[in-house]
Image 1: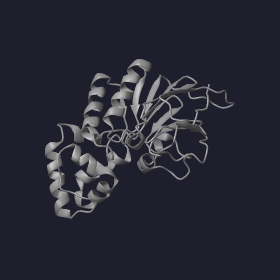
Image 2: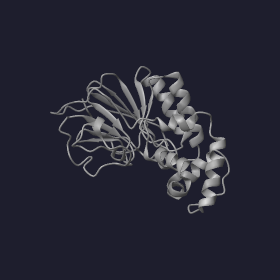
Image 3: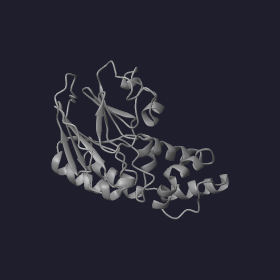
Image 4: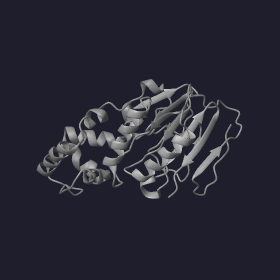
Length: 256
């Protein structure tokens, strides 16, 4: 059952309104957390809420855990700790993690784009780097080498194996979107990380519900079996999680 959200900021919201349509029915309780973007305070706050309100759920993070905010290094460390404590935790790959990995592989080709979209803040969280939004190839190569020296053991490998999607029952979790005409397991990773023009405009014929981040909304919302939970934590201080059980969704949110 579903209840529409009020449009003012709140710390916790539940909704349940009857609809003449298929309800979300995951095979297990899910707690899906939106884009963190380097906000360690928001992450710690939401983890505290989940430990109380969804201790038995599978915790899923939609990606874009880095960039823009000032504490990406701490966020990555905390998420790896959570995964070690709760092995069924899922951390998806967002487009920002993908940009970081491309920078590590090919700094001259991918570096300046990443810097313009929040990479500078992530680099700074691991130490001081003399970079701007536009840099020479030599500067980018040097910064990449310095970053690799400072990254914790195993972090690059951990980032490299982040999945693009997760599905339980008729609930799929992706970072940005999905082609409504293709099964989730057959999606192009670019659509999952960056979005698709038909997403949120066209109903999926398979009746799968899709939970996603990437696109900022004022408040978490549901439309056409799509649940949007990126509430712009890096700018608003409001990080949202969707707690999904059989036929019921509750939104939990940190306070600004």
